[in-house]
Length: 312
Ligand SMILES: Nc1ncnc2c1ncn2[C@@H]1O[C@H](COP(=O)(O)OP(=O)(O)OP(=O)(O)O)[C@@H](O)[C@H]1O
Image (tube, rainbow, N blue to C red):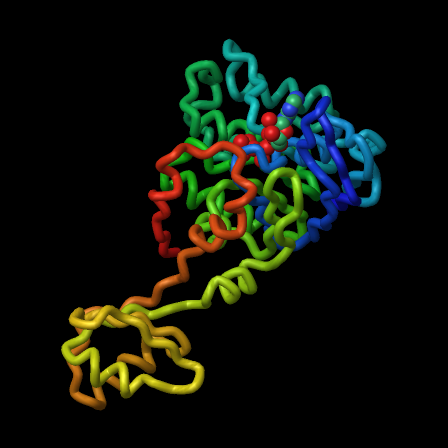
């Protein structure tokens, strides 16, 4: 468990984190989200003692990181900066980490396998792609078989297979009862991976919630239905908890409050042809952007025009 108690972090005049207060529970993946400069990396650095809070307290399993006798076995962390000697192989990097932390050699083989680095383990880390570097960082984070795993932007640079691998890895670690805390810019990615969400903006806590309630607050699930008689279908679907929207003159309706199955059956009973029936998650990315809009530190003039809806 990670506990952040009223933490403030100031760099000179810059308030990087202001009165952050939340708990990261074991057994689930907790996503840590926020736009650039929100304070995610600063918070993560404070968790593993690379930075000290100006005020407040950060503990892992009840103690400050430095108070743990075997910190690598307590918290495994991947932070954004890569700290691997480029001339070293992945294997020797992990081996030297293991030696200096009293971790047996066989664990090095295990994490190399786990991270899918078997074929490149003897190659110089300096020749690694961004994705392979991320995998090596994750292997190092897991070396001590830690109860708490903290990863800063782990999907950065990974291809789709790598993204899927991370997703399953994180869920598996949480299912083993570990505390899994992972930062991201992407709400759509976190919605597929995390159970809990901590959202920050400009160093402040904006939401401490679950993916399920975030989705619900953002408008819940909708179903897109393209059909031969939208006017009649719209009337058929109407009900107290049902919302139907759609542009007049098009064949497409967006329905919330009914499942795709229920809509398909109602349309079939009425003899209305359905050409497309797709369950769509709400645009979580848009809901996230709306929540963090005032907290975006740097924005290009075109950003506000490029809001994309991301189906998950
Ligand atoms: N060492 C430092 N000195 C001065 N300011 C800093 C320092 N580290 C971070 N900051 C500032 O603190 C704020 C929070 O930065 P931080 O890197 O924690 O954000 P972040 O959420 O991780 O952002 P990103 O997603 O871009 O990595 C930013 O305004 C940043 O410029």
